[in-house]
Amino acid sequence: MKKTIIYVGGFELPDKNAAAHRVLSNAKIFRDLGYDVWLIDIDKSLDFNSNILETEKDVQSFKCWSAPYPKSNNEWIKYLTSIKH
Image 1 (tube, rainbow, N blue to C red):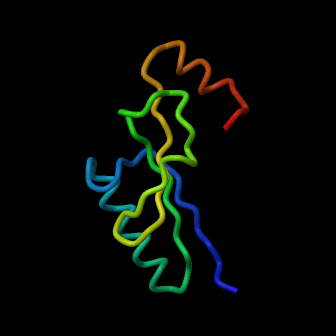
Image 2: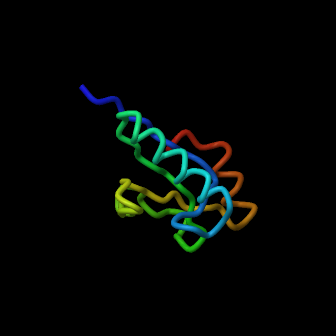
């Protein structure tokens, strides 16, 4: 059975920041070692109440989902105190 790595972080795929390049390089290494790799990045253009499951996309043959990035103080408070996610 193939094991899966879920890589979650503040990177913006496919290449909006340096972290995205690093994540994709690491994901390729993990894939070469025999793991399935799924990526969960952030997307500043998404509405804060967006459903992460509806954001699935393919980035360089990796499954990727995007989490919304909080923009206002109110959204940050909800993000930091909610157990919804």
